[in-house]
Length: 106
Image 1 (cartoon, one colour):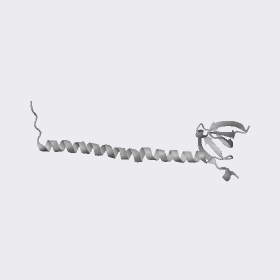
Image 2 (spheres, rainbow, N blue to C red; image 1 turned 45 degrees about the vertical axis):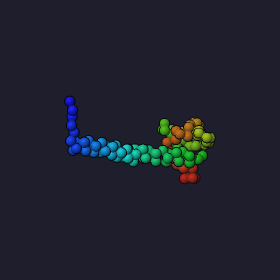
Image 3 (cartoon, rainbow, N blue to C red; image 1 turned 135 degrees about the vertical axis):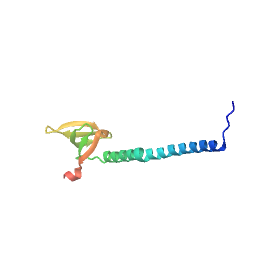
Image 4 (cartoon, rainbow, N blue to C red; image 1 turned 60 degrees about the vertical axis):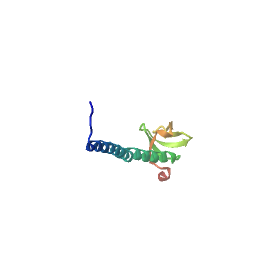
């Protein structure tokens, strides 16, 4: 059995393929601008915040512990928290935000 395609059907099939490729390209661009790019921007600001930590800053950890930085090493931070001045060593990556900068507290 032989199927014959007229010229109109072949052109429509070829155009349909290009439209599909163009739609995939548009979806990739949308994905980049609405998901990937904002996430990278947020990671950059968080890394800048964590690298700007100083002794005397009051911070909140990802676990909800609030304390004041009393010493720092490469990847760890020693904080003092509570009325009993309990000392806790945490990872620098566990710092969620800086509540009060050391310069502002003085």
